Image 1 (cartoon, rainbow, N blue to C red):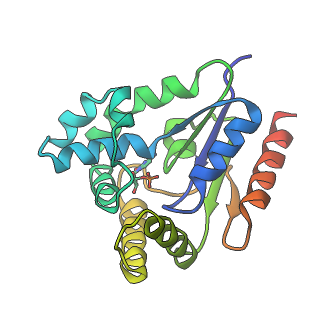
Image 2 (cartoon, rainbow, N blue to C red):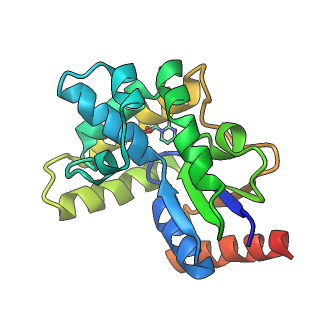
Length: 203
Ligand code: DC
């Protein structure tokens, strides 16, 4: 089979990760969570490494390190993601992944707009900031993270503002993206909707 790329973009905690994993499993495609690239670079900057240097030296093993899912690393990721040279250092890795035979699902912020403008299917997954913050709060508190609801909502809003407001590859739906608002959808319903869209485009 030739390359079949599915681009899934959207803001923090909209359900992209869960949706992307389910879609990849359903179609037997490989999945890349591109946020992990920015998180890995952000984590290195917290250790004192210069961001552009960290992005240029990034390896697949850096994506496996523990602790990339913490709120501090998420904010660091969002900060390094505004730097044009950081973003361009990560382009080749993402495009090579997208073109692999057998199909690929990439989720992030700029997959449908910048990384894979020719993706076969583009989905933009969103939900209200309050719903996203509540989901993230439940996730974090289950892991023992002490953040309060108000802190998590403030973090989500700060990341939204930075991700949508930056000059380089801002978060926005591609013109040909299909919107999936998960505010009032169960995971199962969102996955079913995504699969139906993909089947429609593939047919
Ligand atoms: O999806 P995530 O929460 O793991 O992403 C962490 C940060 O990385 C996010 O706030 C912005 C940045 N990011 C990006 O700029 N472009 C992507 N394709 C993926 C993530």
